[in-house]
Image (cartoon, rainbow, N blue to C red; front, side):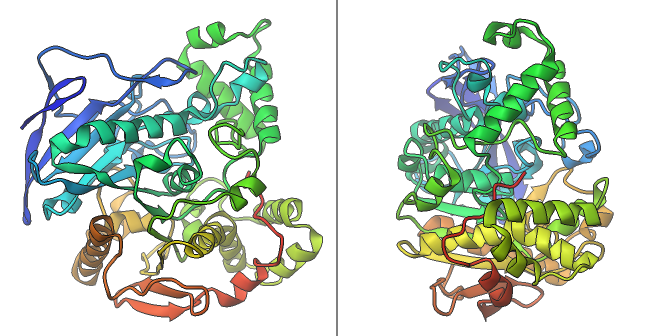
Length: 486
């Protein structure tokens, strides 16, 4: 199937599924990236470009995390601003579009992990998965560290906006509707969705949003972003660092210094989004008061999010709990923190729940609450358990996508069969209907501030009123904002 984009012709492949054939175009360049500079349109090509294999992931290096998380091994490249399109046909049907933003703490991951063919196979939507620059290449506050205001901020988010512009300008040729675009993501992808909802450059480019496990709080305040960038430059060890010098260094060296800063700062990363007063609001407080667009939102989290991180070195230990409490006192003050900590016993289970709520559940819930005050919102919690890790972070993805290299089969509980396959079918149906209609189906009640109805995904789905009430109320003291994580 050959399609004309603004940069040239691309030829994809056809995949056969039970619901019907799906046309897939992989590795289409949506922009080109000069290191530490704005993304710009891709160079046009002559003839037909083969769009039959995924492009390279953006450079990443996280020692201690197995490469099995991604499908790509260590074949990353800075020429990574590519996307993949899944559509029933390249026709004039103008199907609504879902643009998927991958997770990975803004440090790892890539679009090639997410096979969206099942979402597109029904013929009701077009799915697009995108890469964006990560770590110091995507989010280092280099302009402050080098005292050079000409260096753009938050390049990874600017890449995401460039991808949305490509969708606006090209997706009709793939059978999609540029006037019905929903942005969606999980973990860092969900945080990205929340940030894009505050970005005036982005909001004209989408018309609905899906947030799975994350919102706002992972982003740094400007002062911390500057401190981490300055420390990065110090550890780089160049006597006269300049933009030109950094653009010429091997990418591996930049990633090694990124890792050194993380280790020195107890995993605090120098390459995370930050409130820059330009693309984003100037502070987290400003972000909390900034209006979000009047568009439908579907949001939620997994019940046991932080259990996924028990497989990483260190797990959840007392010093980790102490660090979480320190973060809370820094952001909330002593009185509110005492009330929050009282909800979590000093046990492994209590510490896991505290980390789940701090990093994922409460930020997502609070963002959804603010949005629901002026726009239709639906809330969920993913409860179905995995034999080893419960309803852990990222396991909802296995029910929406055919995942490539996310976790070993033993960790994800084996293939989806029986009630798990039925749940995957229901979840995909909800997501498709939300992208198509702006609501996830009549069986899912809209969230409102009194009953706070939440759909619980499990072997048998159910609806609960305010399922996190006791803990939520401890986090809902007046005039408080979540601390910036990290």
